[in-house]
Image: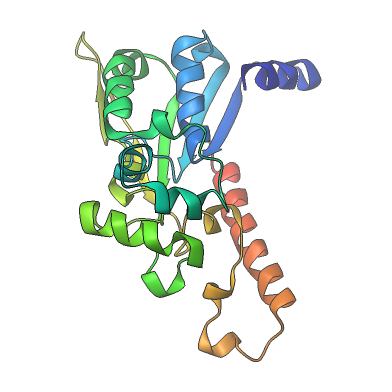
Length: 218
């Protein structure tokens, strides 16, 4: 990510970038800013569906008892980084990073989403149920509360920074957040239209969400 950001500077002549990170991309961006000397080069970070506080699902998947869920989830996502998404791992990173994040000049905002069980992409249903039973509403992979992060960051010197917590404008599971349409999104009024048009319309609506975010960055 750092290499790509530096490429953007070379390509555009810009001095700073705005980053929009989905899922673990949000955590990767935070780590880059904190640990790789990039705070002065990032104007803002917007995260969408990012497990800032971890997800109990990761604890379950990498521990005993998560084999069934792991098999289902590997069909739709890469699980190689799941160890970094446990509640404990994220807590350690948050505690270590908060002082730097509160004092740097990066503007942080988060978007969180959830979806009803009947609308969740079928392979995410077991994980949605597991997270609901342990942490409440979620997007099928990440609890809503974890996506929100913290409303305020506090540095050791007392410096405080607000984090804007927003709700994703569309009901969305973790894959819908990046425009991945699935048959569960079909509503009664859409049942007579063809699936290609439904998918295209959904992707367009999701794209407009990202355009709105980009157009309103500081």
